[in-house]
Image (cartoon, rainbow, N blue to C red; front, side, top):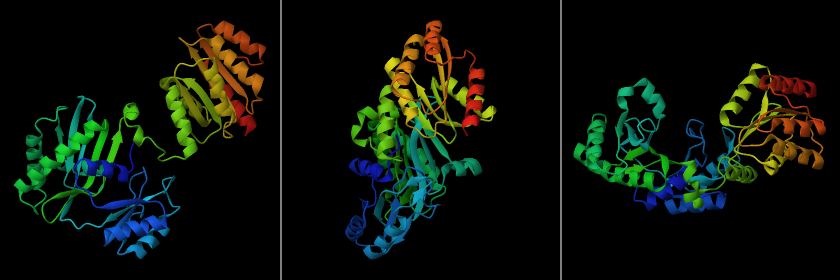
Amino acid sequence: MRLFEYEAKEIFSRNGIPVPRSGYAETKEEVVEAAKRMNGPVVLKPQTITKARGKAGLVLFANNPLEAAECFARLQGRTHNGEKVRGVLVEEKISVLAEFFLAVTVDYTNAVPVLLSSPWGGVEVEVSASKRPETIKQISLSSLQSHLERHASELGSFLSKYISEVEPDVLKEQLQFLLGKMFHVFKSYDCELVEINPLGLRHDGTLVALDGLMVIDDEARFRHPELVKPRAQSEEEFSREEEFRKRGWTYIPMEGEIGILSSGAGITMAILDLIHFGGGRPANFLDTAQMDRKGIYDAFKIFHNNPNTKVLLVNIFAGLNRCDELSLGITDYLRDFNPPFPIVVRMIGNRDNEGRTILQQAGIKPLESLEEAVTRAIEEARCVS
């Protein structure tokens, strides 16, 4: 779960990480009020989950509240990579001597936190890493927050080679203070990433987080309910995703015609590949965990209400599930609704003979071969297009 910049900075501030003064605003009046509080030049930054706002020309500067209102009018209603701008961060403009990159993330290979830094802040660090890998410093950390003094000294020595505007000892002292705060946030909020880019070096030698990013482990969302809210989706999409999450389902909308109901990420990906290989286009897919009679009934209603689904391909590979129960769920749906699409069922596994009998009585002839089912779905999609 990726937080908005203003949320990350609120957490930074509460935990002692220096940030510019700012205010989050969703209306012209709120923007003007925030700019007045700053009492000087400000920067307006759309609060989007998608990165690279500056490259898209969406980070604007204003010298007074009137200009801030004009900038907000230019941003209002804009989209960034399909994400609608709903609010902006109005932040005091800060002059700095230098900018660099600092992050704490997870080294999954070695199962430890890792510190990343680069003297080139304000840019995509992936680009710097590919062009000048010697400018990326990586230090493995202890999960016990020990040895931070040594790590800060090592990092300060590295950055001092590129940053001459401050004495190395001052930079090391500042980094030690900041690393302790960042690592505390990283652990307290169950983060996969805490990033400051750019991290500004002020004229007095202190550091300030000019931008902030936090990504919280999805499995730890329940420990931070105050942060769970709609982000790059509508209220309706958010509610639907939360319901799916509670059920252990994953739903992904796409741009084709064939809806896919399947269980298991691996086989669902294989179905997507088979559809593409056969010249078809998936409209969406619902990857479910263990499903019962009521669950498959509810899943069918999801596809029923999606006008993009022209054909529904159902893959039932039953182990713990029972084909007869799932078939009864499908017939429950057919009893209550007139499906707006052809249904193709591939069924194999636990009690599949009983399941086939139930579906055949309802007018559906299930297939055993996944390839045959995919081919049938593609043919049906061509017929209805």
